[in-house]
Image (cartoon, rainbow, N blue to C red; front, side, top):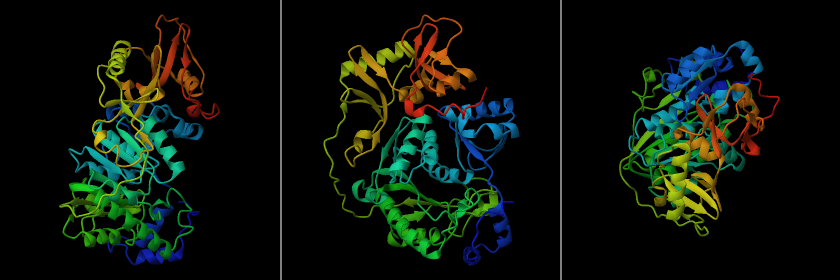
Length: 479
């Protein structure tokens, strides 16, 4: 029990007005004061769930499955490891095989993907830091176009870093207020996730000070922002498409009432898609409307709210044109495309590429298939992945080539042991016990997952890890 958790009486009085009759306010308070169980999600772009289970067994990690997410697990590590090694510095985390993600936050992508069997264009409207974006990407498995939007400049950088670490190849980033999508990308998306900015009432188990500045007045102000965003999401969604609205807060002001606003504004054009059968046990959090109102004591998790809608028909709306400069990318010349594909096939055994090869100056990029349909709608912060830079002798590969496409390589890969991996993430070259005769670039792996590039040099592999990814030597203590 964490008695340092700040829960103001005014908040408790407000909760009493809307907590369901079958739930106890005392149980709610006790749940808020319990430390949050750690949960992780397996990144199936790099590691299978079965491989993760084997790793856990070999390393004495105890896991308990999250019932609504087949790749989600509550995790308990040995006490000595927990004390000496932050989970962010474990080999599974650094290699992008897992994402530390609260179990409740796995629900919105599950609700969306459960209904988006053939979605080509998906929008994550408020995406940072990237847990739900990368979860959606894993479910899409490299197919379609995933637009991840974030308003905050600093959070966009974190989002981009997580997308790279997790090996996502079909994502493009934008940096706008989510209000613009309804105007500038009218009916462009098959599926939209709006995990809206909120008051965060459900996060108190993770952040004991989450309620320090709580007030009903603040809830009302935030709800106005949420209504603008959900309105924008409606217009950006194609007829027949699915919208999931979620928050990590509890108040109906930011949840049911925002959903009611959507239903009233577009009464003849949208309907609720109930979540009663999303997973076994969903009925324990189900509202009369078919939403999920997750209280922390129900599943021993954070508080959360999830609603799902289907757009049944279009509503007239004038699409606007955003002012932007000339599009800086152009299709890669056929000669460059053929040479690059031949090189990665011969050197790495990568048989084919999914996507469009594009150039910007001397840079070679890979855009997701279908990107041309929306590439001129808005100005993107980042499109696809940078594969390399052209020079007179060919293409010098970039770090992202390895993290996103290295899983397809069958030759010129090198599996690092823990000591070598520690050296690699500290920016050091990798010493080899046996001299090698290979030449050129090599894809480095950890836990069978690609983590970056190096270059064969007889007795060592020269480290090509970007400087901004080099870790503090004092934090990595695997060996």
